[in-house]
Length: 239
Image (tube, rainbow, N blue to C red):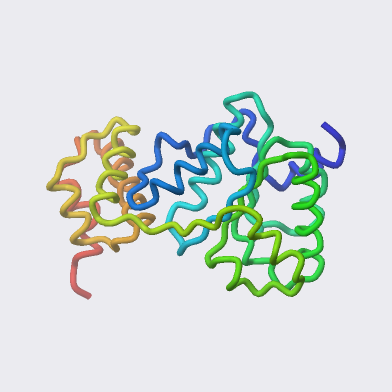
């Protein structure tokens, strides 16, 4: 790997060996078609470029990281980068030497000339080198504050897919799956209590599950409704 790519990898997640989000962990809900297309791309039998958009917690980051993980499992270099966390457009240099590039939160750098030029050049290099590309943002390409017309057209070179947030049934499925990975038995009554007394966002529910797991280990007790009441009591007491 060149010095340029090594420099870039200081700022991106290299999925050659890291275990991150996987397709097996993803609960598609209304996003089954999008998941199928992303899976095909990661298996090198689908579209070479996909653009995913949706509100936060709709699964964009999970899908991008799962695709990188799948490529890494095939022994192919892949990298994930959130542009909201990137410090300089130079991080995009040399990524055309990978097999898959996944760029998240691209809305964060739209309207910034240096970033737009760097992203435009990267997309051209990836297409020339036949490197797969996944893009994700909160809005579709047409709603991005893009100043460079040629970049706007390249962002839509492949299918544009909207991701929907999970309904309550899907969130329950995610909670059960994450609990099983932790070796926890999560009863329906505990899940019902969490939905009744915690914010309904998936991130909040998963944070609550982590609190329960920690309390269970610290107190050497199974996860039961009484334990859930103890853990979240401060949340449900009136102020």
